[in-house]
Length: 134
Image 1 (cartoon, one colour):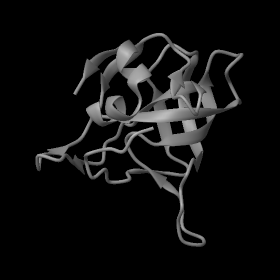
Image 2 (tube, one colour):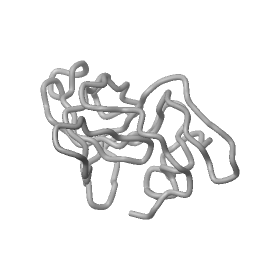
Image 3 (spheres, one colour):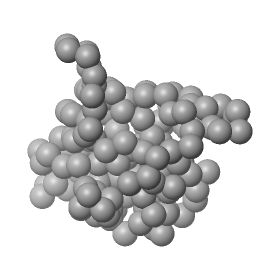
């Protein structure tokens, strides 16, 4: 997992409901934890684009509902600053479900909608199945 060039503002915290943008069988995911978050005592953990979260599937196919799965954030509404000085944001908060957390291997085979280029810099396998990279 590589670093990200942009200064990503953390726009997602525990309790946020994310739209699932792949064909893994889930459609909504509620964030219950953030991987590798180091924060102050009693502070809610936060995540941004390119971070891995742990979430509970709220809507989807019956075999996926109520499961706790790792997910990768690919879009966020909160604007963040890219290296060239441009501020960038998306229309929704979205994530994809991961099969293997260490390698960043997605469970689905296609991704609906755009993916931030910061995610593709960090996780190469996500870039292979993404239709559009912004």
